[in-house]
Length: 214
Ligand code: ATP
Ligand code: PRP
Image 1 (tube, rainbow, N blue to C red):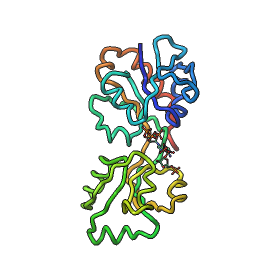
Image 2: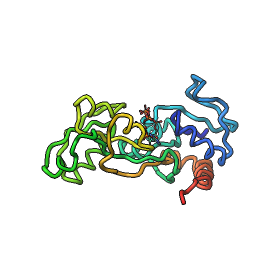
Image 3: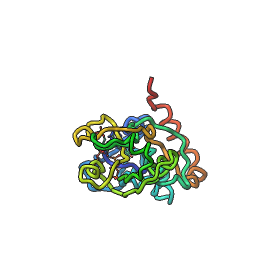
């Protein structure tokens, strides 16, 4: 049996063409079904539907042989025990710093002020500001980071940005781009040894279906 961990929403949607290339069709719709283990057309392949942030953990501990997860989530997890063979070029966005439009970020940095930063991505934020020599107090949030500067809880946020629509709707501006983000295929290292043949087949099929930007 080969078990692949995925999250609902954009990763699931954008993974369907890759699954198709591997000859895998999902028999249930995760948005409608309450089932957490989804059958496929292949009797020896099943999907686990887990929280996006839990995908690396399921693969690390062998609950799943493979998983698809954002680079952001992978960096926060640490990647222990995971082989990362492919950048799938899906769920693309960027990790950025944003502030209220009336906050003078450049001056605050120049003056060496201590910044309060709200984020779900504490490891990425800590590393980024340390590399710039900026002192920060980090506030861990689990979502709706955009609110924190609006209610005076933080000077800045670190969050993913795609169209920029969410920042704009909340009167925030992007002041730094930390890194480009896309989703990765991750594989349990022990499973790769024990089930080399079928896992290799999936990796190769996914690799052939990646759409590389021009
Ligand atoms: P959780 O439910 O565990 O908190 P989440 O809400 O971040 O996770 P998703 O919103 O499904 O989960 O995001 C999954 C991945 O998609 C993220 O890890 C990131 O790599 C990418 N992503 C997040 N937001 C966007 C976006 N607006 N556009 C494109 N990709 C995105
Ligand atoms: C993500 C992220 C931002 C938004 C950015 O939220 O947390 O709020 O996307 O995208 P944009 O630049 O195109 O507006 P998501 O849509 O995943 O909602 P969630 O955080 O509630 O899951």
